[in-house]
Length: 118
Ligand SMILES: Nc1ncnc2c1ncn2[C@@H]1O[C@H](COP(=O)(O)OP(=O)(O)OP(=O)(O)O)[C@@H](O)[C@H]1O
Image (tube, rainbow, N blue to C red; front, side, top):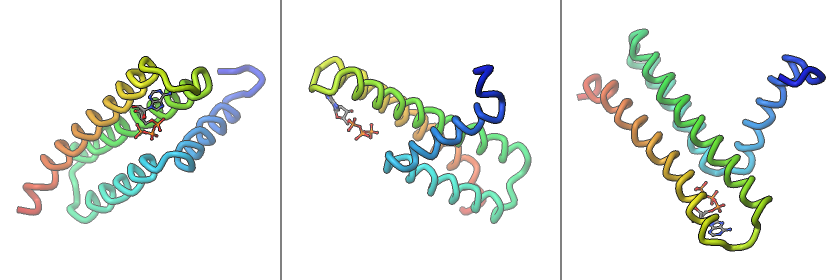
């Protein structure tokens, strides 16, 4: 924690970072819509506390991957704006992390909601 910023300032900066990602990344807005849909489904199907815990972990995992991916993309754009095969590898690997997190979240959602629907 930055002493001059303080705890409230650190939270403000973190929320500002999330808002920046939401404004600049279409994928982050897709995650936001998906998060809203999953929360609505959780209420609709009256999920148990254990199911809510899985939903929270899976959703947080996807958001964490997306925000880190965005930070890596922006870092690379700042450090090396020109086309470079290594930048491509770095960005593709970061995007791969988001994809894996999203697949895991879809599997978790399927395990929770499919038995309630079928
Ligand atoms: N400087 C670069 N050099 C080489 N390839 C790049 C470079 N910038 C982007 N790319 C390629 O284009 C893809 C998309 O990069 P971009 O920075 O536009 O992210 P994005 O469109 O926000 O993608 P994402 O869906 O991963 O968030 C990268 O995964 C990479 O394959």
